[in-house]
Image (tube, rainbow, N blue to C red; front, side):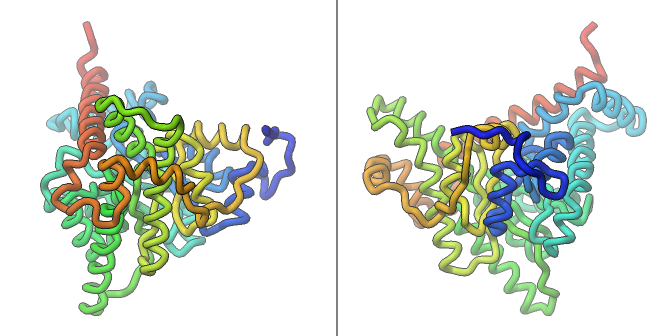
Length: 368
């Protein structure tokens, strides 16, 4: 069933889309835009978005979408910083893009007391093995704007950096995360950090921490595994793997009263939003997914407490890699960075970092 958003009544000057209705009916389910592109974010805020995120892949796409503007800025930065490397210039541009997007979210940040209205900026994937380097970059990013939330990988080194950053009052968005075990390790590290703050008499602050589970990338990995092993599963079953992990993590977070929220990212299908509505969590679909949902979905009722069908879960649990992702103790902290989805994602982020360097290089040293 479809509907035409443009024909519906408006509220506060914004179209009364299905996503906006969802936000009004279930304000605890926060909508973020999975891009820092300012034009997309402005429209997404009209849908009810109260946050946004960026990573190396997203940053390259956002800069490429407005290349004449950012090419001019890259040339200016090179003039201002004659000894800066291509990478230095690229990261400055990403910072400037993020600050611009963060300004759009300031009203939500103020209205929520800091729980929402956050703009995520991701640490350099080339620093992923060095907790001190991750922490130093997190501190730099946090100083860019009051509503910045810093993405740090949910790896062994990253968990160490996450705990110390949260202790220092930095808002955390754990990324490169696909499993219940990773989300729990993040939430527990953040609880330890805030306990340390209390012990040392530091003020309690609302930082809006989130622990991402990249549900679609978990689905992708399981599809790779089943293809490699020539397995035959019921069509559509693998599209529920990320959803199952997200639902389980949310249930545990709720039961244990963690201050951190689960965040659903890496959309591959609408289940990764529609099955989570009603939960105290964050859903972060790309802008094009938001438009498709508004154009083709009639309603988004609360489904967070509806379990994945037993027959689907039983079939998924035949896969050892799914069990590692789904069980709270399915992975040790030492195994986080070696999980297949993590290796694939880190490689993609590293490739995007190289593309960012190339984008700068093509401006400064154009092809003759």
